[in-house]
Image (cartoon, rainbow, N blue to C red; front, side, top):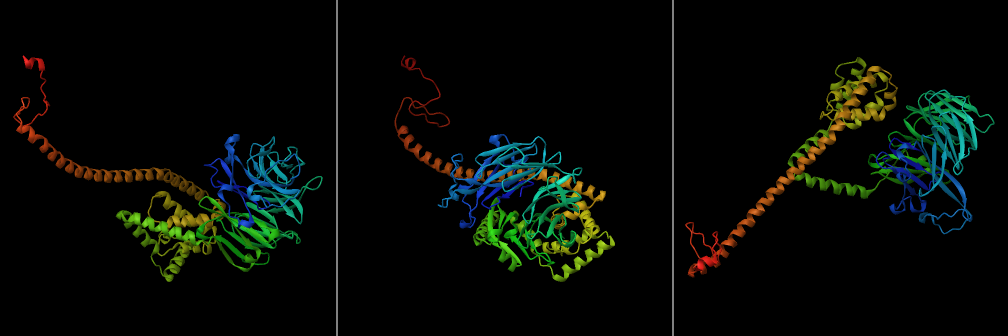
Length: 575
């Protein structure tokens, strides 16, 4: 797997390395995690190595492809003096070992190959043309450039091992490039906006072996036995029987990001961070794998030799890893990972701390109670069914009361998700709801009504593919207006938060000044008492003495020991 928007997540082929970066826009580095099954894939932070792109005048945000190559390295060779990482030391001696290499593809034609820990650059390959796509297979790197030329390169050599020009898809916009395997035979997958081509590069003149007319495809994979080709687009996962003239035999409604197989299991990483597992011949998914607390799976890799899958999921910008056996997936319909009681205890402690802080802020506490009352209010099942039926009928009748239905107090978040999944079955209904919500939010992005943002959130999450397929100009125009409104509110929000922070600081400063003033008043009273007592001790003896320099003023101020505001010259006084 390569990069997805702002995220880098990629397992090495042997599942012993994982490249990760949660935010390439903010950080110009990638972390390499060493993975060890004997340690249950728990990684000590001291073993994580970092690739700093800035030291070589590169930007990780420019990289369009991340992948891994692997090769058998002769450990006895005098030409290779590479120190084994501490986490890989097993005490066993062997003449060869598998070494991983981290591959980065830049759009300007550069391919930079790093060592397994990222500390060294092994090779830099420079292609004359812009790179459109890339993939890796064992020690080989396959690239597609802007001339629609496919090249096979080795990670440690700059000279291509094989080169050929595409025939099918040459004049189309290519959106995805991938290497596939069918019963041990390497094939090249070319995906355009309307077609999928599977090319056999083994012949002297590479030819197209399969072609499928399918729009907006995102990933392809052969079944483990090579009999079926699986193609995922924005709306569904489709299975074609290659023995029956590439006949479509089955499809599942799911939005897929990554597609892989393990035995007869079809594993699909969905756009909402779950793994759905399917089998040919079964209408429903066999098993769903999710992460507790609404966290997301970012990548996975099947380990065929061990009959298990290794999963990486994101927890507070750090990857966590867990392996699940094939037997568990086939026998359990639903698997939840990250069941950690300690995390729950930490959250409970944090909640208690927040509650204590809010006790000193009556306004915040009152606002919180009002919000909780709105969210946690009990809604009867009959009310939920009734409002769902009313909304469905209004969608059919094109009623003007759709907005009132969406903002009804009978809706809960689970019911909103259920309605979107089960009741919105046509593009027309989807378009009506989206237009209604987008218009209302565009007019007032700061509306305190929390139901419309919930509707928008789950529409974009569950129906993003269908929304993207709507070609209606009116819908696209409303979408642009919505983006503009949300963008302005997004820009204003940090300013408002800053003002809120300053006001809170001023409030605390005023309280501090008040406390300091009271403290100063108390100290002043104590000092006044002490000064009065001290002056009495000094002035009484002076009043008893007949000192020539002592002079009483009309205001009864006593000057002692020559302390006067008049200068007296001693010589003149003597005369």
